[in-house]
Image 1 (spheres, rainbow, N blue to C red):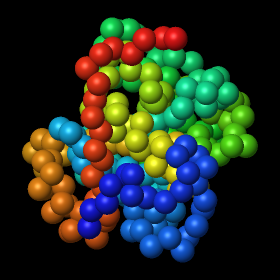
Image 2 (cartoon, rainbow, N blue to C red; image 1 turned 180 degrees about the vertical axis):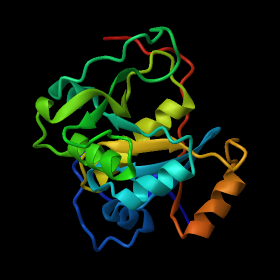
Image 3 (cartoon, rainbow, N blue to C red; image 1 turned 90 degrees about the vertical axis):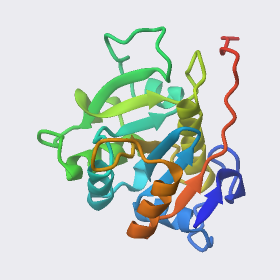
Length: 217
């Protein structure tokens, strides 16, 4: 089953409604904490909504990916949580800006699927305070829309954040790059096979990437 981002219901950026009656496998999966597979230009990703992340969903994502989960947040959200910038990152690198990786407090080592699921839910919870998170941790944090030189991967990440908001969830998406048993990225055909094998929704994200660099102002 395949859907396009612009076919989903709800408002454009967080103004959607949390309507469980919407007949969309993608929406149902996001509300239930189950993975959604994303296919974009040159990229195959597993996505979760941070607000509804479950131990089972995180475990599936880790098992079928690089294991590095990144929470994609709006810059204003990172600022509100006082997330420090990631140190040692080349400012000229391609890709979104990164904040320091975090854990939720009282998650032990923070590495287990249960701990990372809790950290993701805390990141997305509007009631979370800066002191509810500690850095460094095990959940990577990317800032949506902060690329100086836009890439397809960055555009897909922005689309994932918008998707969470459109369906009425907090606009924090969880992404990980999907790999096969040999550690190679999956092409669209194999992503579809993986979706069918796991009875997961597959979402095609059409994201034209501008060739000009972003400018501030």
